[in-house]
Length: 522
Image (cartoon, rainbow, N blue to C red; front, side):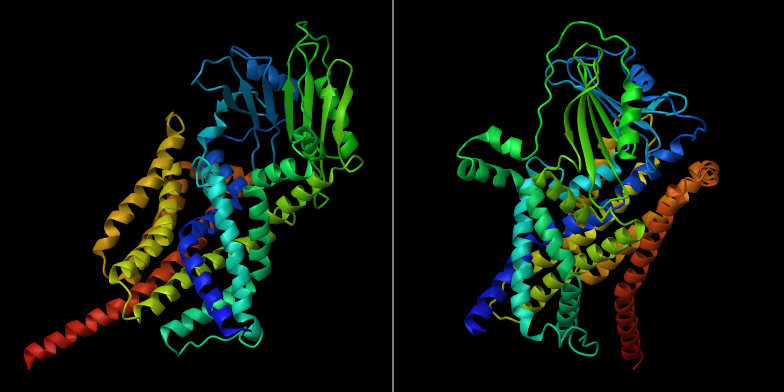
């Protein structure tokens, strides 16, 4: 390979990696946690409520409970999400009459046995907040930002393959533990990079598709479809549901019968039911569901309630190549097709990529620090930025977890203050960073505090909800305790790592103090 080309691609790899490192760390760190967002949501929600036993109320009755005494806008949507393993309550979203600037829907969490409205599902925002950090940073147009970060990440992967192609196999298990710091970092960076290569390529490609899909759509509409947007939407499988309001009350709507027939047909309970023109003769039910025995099999249909006529059907007998392809990519991206063990493997690989990002930045700092013409301010900035965008994000996440547990569910601004706690922690870390000369030790303390916060969260769980958690376990709801075990494992890893970072510094400090004492005595 041409040496000049190799030098250029190496420089591009290191500079691009440095530029996107902070956001890329957030993407992989938050994404690794978000693999368990269903479990985290149940952990945050379930201890607050006593699990009820008995037969579930039918969907038709839940709809009536949801709209009772509300300014329901029947010409808009009425959406219901069925109870599941990790969310044993009905979630109903009721579109209500509203003025500009007001909320356009009420979100309800309804007990499936008693029909009691127990909370707003949006109050338990922690898991969704972390998930949104992963794909759009919780900022407007953030998905496009992450899309371009993913594009540069894809280039970094390809350039890394070019850089190490000749020695990719021979140096695979090479780790020079007794060599210089730069050699250790380089070996660690290379080994993690090669081991996670299929994983990172899959994530880079799928992330590009998800986050920059609007750009592809514009290009397709302009070039392939010559501006015919409707033809593009038809081929993409988009079906518009816009029944004309009849202004006539429906008679004997057989909602539960329709759902029962769908369940029998696909051998799977529909996960989402959405009504258009609820209560009117023109009402239409949109029904979606998944067949979990298959890798990527999902069905969707729209049915006129008055005569049970199917307006459209999307399933294995009426496939759409684009929709099916996107769903396959989605299953691969989220790792939700082969049980908990695969998600644990994804989590380990995701955290490994976080380590890849950190070692890449440290390699850049190590190399530039030996160059005479390198600005100390630039090195200090990169050092602080690396520490803030990694250790700062870790401790901010730990603070968000304990805030989620501490705030009562009666507090109306519960989700907002959880987000504020995350942002405030990042700001605090940024303010304290410049005053710490030993960055490694500071990172050690950040990890130690994060670990202690996670352990404190688990202790709080048992102080506040100990009896309820045991009752849930006896009823077969084990997600809460399983999540606590995960938090403790991560906490112990943080504390162990922090000890490794802080211990050498303390030893050196003690040695210097002993030398000073000997000098005074002599």
